[in-house]
Image (tube, rainbow, N blue to C red):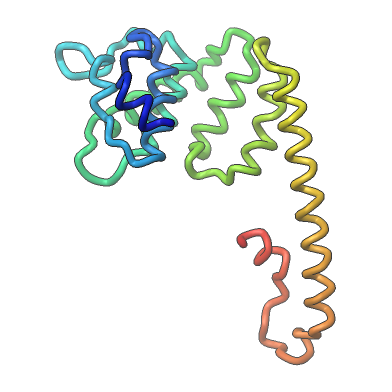
Amino acid sequence: CLKYIYVQYGDQWISNNDLQSTSLWFRLLRQQDFCIIWIFNKYKNTNGDFMESLRDDVRGMLSLYEAAHMRVEAGEEVLNEALNFTTYHLGNIVENYIFNNDTSLEAQIHQALHQPLRKRLPRLEALRYIPIYQNEDSHNEALLMLAKLDFNLLQELHQKELSQISKWWKDLDVLNKLPYVRDRIVEGYFWI
């Protein structure tokens, strides 16, 4: 579906003034190995720097910050510049408490600066994001309920699996048979 949309419309469906949508579009396509770094050139001024007017769009800058973390090592100077630009300005926003009483935005910026979305575990991120999404005015009740239900059902499944694995581990009596083995079954399960 993404390939069809990309081939049919390119970036025509995105408003030139909507940095948040552009960044999301970039992230979705980059995850599917599309190379579209040129999409951010329209947010640069004649000197080749990102426009200073972007700093007024805090949600857009946060999205650009997350998108910039999708860069690869070489040849993507636009994303390196975007990361530097957004890190600096989001850091200033955090230091000066410029959130306009939007606590969900504040939480998102703190989390992003601490650890970008790409480097987080998706299921743990869902647990962090559900309360943030719940406080947004535009949240969808059905979608919110589905997310909570999905998370709780998966958590129950993990608890059952971990219980069975722990019983199996104790039945093997590995600690007495192999005293040099570490007893870190929960950690191993978590990483699996």
